[in-house]
Length: 281
Image: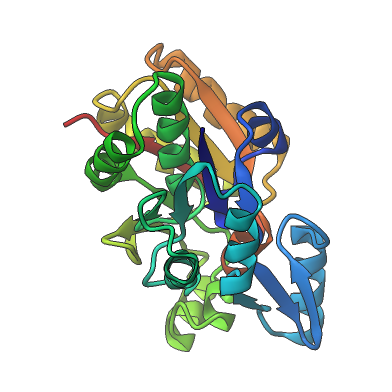
């Protein structure tokens, strides 16, 4: 049996996780002296409240080597395909590899550096779900994922720069200018790192709509089986407007809405929304 494992930054919904028996290894969120598990005993709303109160972004940490050992030791006769947040953003990938080495299970466990975050990872997980259902071998799945991960298109537009600033993701000057001019930058994931792209102005409804509309040409050239709308706490009306635009394209087989977990939300802040998909070759 091939088991699919991901750290919690893949931001997949409980419904998807349960339906496909995906094993999630929680990341850690540290609120001062308190350590919480992403998706287990902390919510994004609690993080926003704490962050605004103390003026800091929580520290986040990867699952430990022992966390991964515990997962793999539970079913040593099985094979595993494991997805982690980009190795340039976290020690999750390295810790997983150390666990595999310690257990001497290299032949049964393949570890994927997603070179991505949030449902940029989730898209890769879902591709693996499809391949397992098709009866593909572990080696075939690994080869395919390592090819397709280069075609994942992950981006998001943020409501406020203060969380990225607090977490060291942008300079103080950039944050000050952004807040003063009411700029809402588009952030893309390129080669495993976050890069600034376009900047938008206006109300949340306007700049998020502009962000999605600007991707129309690229969306119509995407792999059409699924697309994610992932957000960190946007108004329902705004998310519904994005979904309506995407549905009106009449292109995607499935549009999946998910809520970003505590680790991703702690860095991007509330009101962030992304549209994530895989491009065609």
